[in-house]
Image (cartoon, rainbow, N blue to C red):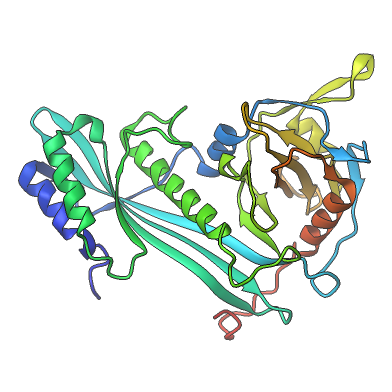
Length: 345
């Protein structure tokens, strides 16, 4: 089997000649992001903790029952997009008195289209390879030689081969991630998010406004001014610290997310809420849908998904549309795996 990281050989040679590399004990070690990347991403890009008011019209109900809608009734969700990362810690680079973890990341994202008969077709895939070090603690000479080696690296089947500075802040690392190796794992996840949004912006073979895309996970700020075909983000893991102010005047009440979802019944959705970012016209509308009954689950957040939808104009979401999207999601809650029967190509 060929070495999947062969494209990085020239850059790794630079590291071994310009500095001293202490290899990972025994072999490369797979790094996992901590805390959970999905919840952290939602917290860092999910706007303010305080959520004021509803963002739908005309309904003002906090909980609404919706009708489950299967694919045979309304084939609304036809495209699905997801990404993945695998991060390896391969050693520590020593350059004089400075040091940096050396990490390699495989970053993938793919979109598939579901046909009317339920079969799946791959429509777009990206597979990037990244070498990651902390530029802030390395000399300019070493970093420039790494950049030159990466620029001339053969792709060998990858969409891109890139060098990334883990010391540079981004949507993931800016607020809470300080430990160098953790910054590397979150940097790789940010690369994955960028690949996902790049795929979502493509026409994916002529996607129309009647063919919705589901992005796995929460939508970040890169979707605030969305101008592409319609999509929603569906997150199974999401931030838990939201505080909601419902109503106005003397009758207004404030509840946390756990209290909001504790009274959410199976087959129901919550009202739609806004997520804003200062200085941006667009916003992200979000709500929660209970797919599974609470019976037998550990706590109120289980069995619930968070649905997010870009509102680039800032207008409230229509109640009819929120009901339709929620009903179609409930209709998707039970999958039918067929194994390797040739339905995915």
